[in-house]
Length: 116
Length: 78
Image 1 (spheres, each protein chain N blue to C red):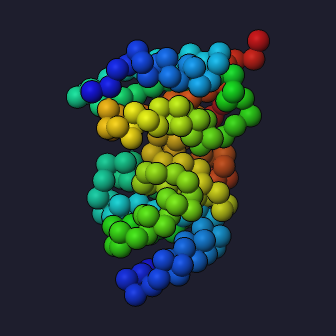
Image 2 (cartoon, rainbow over the protein chains, first blue to last red; image 1 turned 45 degrees about the vertical axis):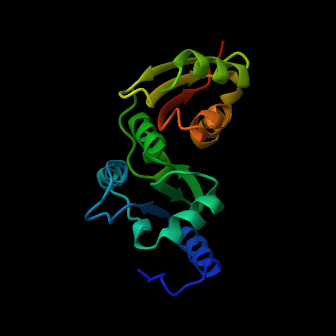
């Protein structure tokens, strides 16, 4: 985890694009996967842990500019934001719905639930 | 305080042929909506949600909505 406090906004943006490009799955959240600090972030962490996928993450509370730069770049206003294969999948609502439908497991290539 | 009837109309006007159902999840500004719209066919959930948020953005901006939980889907193929 790189400290962003000494970075310019351009450097923060470069870091975000490199994190998203360099990780199969990457989660921007409030808090950390070990200690989420918002119910919506926690719910996505629980789902990712349940699905059993490895993912990178960044705590957007560490520096208020991260959220500002991230949302400007991704065109999505809320946190958490889950990226898979370089693309924004969505926040808590979308991740939850995709998990319930088995679509998240398919996207991540983990075992899908038995056919309904 | 959000006007559920007005919001339903705003969503259905922005997405002709759509059916929107809104419920108050508490306090009058935390809402949940289920939206079924033909425009959603072939879009990702993210794109579907963006269309709905865009339709009611002005009610976020003026503070009458704080949160809108969404479930979206395209109608079943006929």
